[in-house]
Structure formats: C-alpha cells, structure tokens
Length: 132
Figure 1: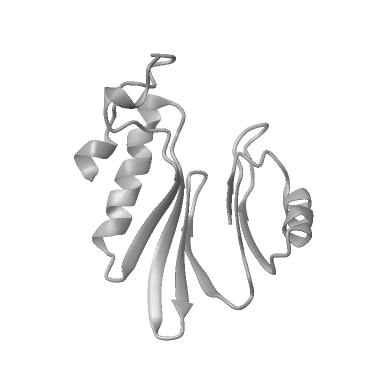
Figure 2: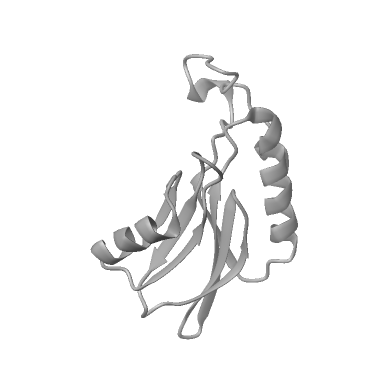
C-alpha cells in the first residue's frame, strides 16, 4: 500500500501500519506540514528499497523466481518542479532490466482534455509526455 501526503511523523504512520495489518513499512518523513510518503507490505513479500526521496520510493520485489520493480511516485504539485521527478524516473528507467511498474499520483495530465477547468495551470501538460 502506498500513501502520499501523510503529513505525519514515523510514530503515527507506524501505528497506522499496524492497525491496517501490515508487517513492514518504509517512510519518507514530511517536510514541515506537507509531504510524507509511506509504503506498507506484508512480511511474505521480499522487498528491497532501492531509492527514496520526497517524491519517489523505488523498490525491488522478489516473489520466488519473479523479480520486478515498483516506483511509487508523488509528482510535484508545482508544475515547474515536476520535470525534476520525470528526469529522475528517466534516469532510474535507463538502468532497468526487470519488469517495472510506476504507480501513484503524478499530478500530471497527458493532454488538455483530461481536465475541464484551468486552476493553477494544472491543465497544461508538462514533461511526462516527452519521457514516456
């Protein structure tokens, strides 16, 4: 399970993890009153955290002979900063040989038809279409 904008310290997120029945946790602490990421998983999954920052948690999952990678992503809400997230994902992707899943909230539109209103420039596509 992937949570974004937890806005909570480790102690609170750990109590949530336990109440939801997950054995393992990896978190990125919030910066002030915003941000915070958390990934929960069951002990039966062999998970290795490869990379983490305030926008991405990248993990390798090994299920028997199957290996795949998941990048949990929270795209920046500031349009001008989103390209940094896409560039980091592109750098990560270049080195990928295993199956790779990208999941999360990209805060991104692929084209203008995905949103009716233009609030805060959100309906202006940014760099993700150039990368993918």
